[in-house]
Length: 152
Length: 454
Image 1 (cartoon, each protein chain N blue to C red):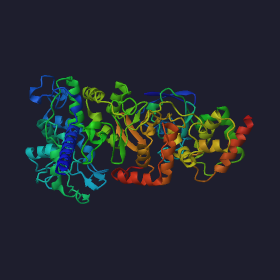
Image 2: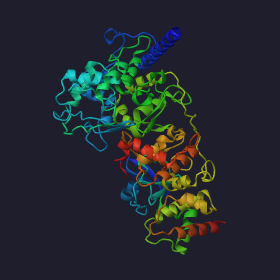
Image 3: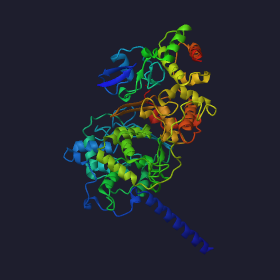
Image 4: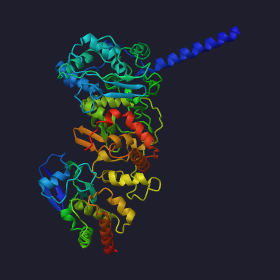
């Protein structure tokens, strides 16, 4: 039995240590906002925060999480930058199909947490690992800048 | 005139004798230890050969299984994705390709008809059942140190495997390397065909480690440089070499370029699990050695290996001192895009999510790049190979995985990202080109062809 801190709550899960965190979140904690994409840390849709860092949950074994707190897309709206970004996302209707968007918002939030006023190059460096097959990159960039402007 | 010729001949003879002597000294992997050795039968210390004490009362097959792991037969006698021990693994050499053979007990295509004497001839002298000579890609010059009893225990284990019908693939070698008869000369020069002799000046633990490293694990076959005749040159014992397109690192006790500054605990962890925090993990051929062989050793045996490794004289090689501090958290500091825009872009998209801009992985210690030898190797050989082939290892602690990028990214991309990674996280940036990457793919083709990609 492992105890995880997910979105501020303590959750007990009875899973093997070598189960990827993504499986635990979706199948054992019913937090299905985090998506499964490539399964090899190359698309970014499974991004969650572990101790504030954006991490691909398909590659993180639950046994390696330890006591580090986890935040998922379900909990990110409770953080200041997460809330701002979700608002900015809605204002300009960023998503098209939406499948990658949870991961995009998680990576964007981690970016603003570390760098409140990112320029284009900063956004590229932080977001390059989050793919969007609909090509919403331009709106993603704009939404991040709009959210950052609200902090200025 | 005649006198001049006489002096010339004398000088030639002295040079030739000196050269022969130099070769002779270089062929003994245990010569560095000095002191006196005795035949095993007269050794007074604890038993240094055979399976460990825990298996002393186990049956022959069980002991043979342990020894088969210790001798790591499986790594070379299994093709990628093929049946274990059924052979077909390709050794790509500068002069052609040699394939390993089927050592399952199939009577037609394997070793099912081998008598004990025939098996020993193969293990100790490199002679097949039909009398033909094996190529020294089969490390019989190392296995010749193995006792008859241990070799026959391995045979007993191999004979319990399910026979697999897998005919030998034909080697593709250029002349004169395709003349097996010539190996007779090589054998005279480089295979003394002598069993292990314990060193009375060393502890029983050291002798056990020496037996495991030399007669069983044949570490030197990858980690010791070779001479002009492709025999191990033990003047530079364990000083590192390029094998199958991967660099086997310097594991002598040199503090800068070897493992002299690793703690015993780190060395033990690396041997036992193929990973030590702060030093990175084994991939490629060493990953196989860890998973198929070293991880099966008992703790006592692993400690013995550590004790033995500690005694290898320091040999400096061309590796710079490993950088152990993390890179800056921002991509804008440290090695940056100004030098390598393409490398940084690829790193941002494909690598940073697991390896982080600092090199310290938020996901797993296995993915931390800081302090890793490969990253501090300015040739970037193993970095490029890892990018090309990925990592797919099954360990007691779970699966260790990195995708193989060799199929999806161009040689230019792989060179750029390897150069970026070595510059950002290592001591000195590499200078690989697409051509270099293509050559590395070729040398390790036995891996990259069938590497899994997620």
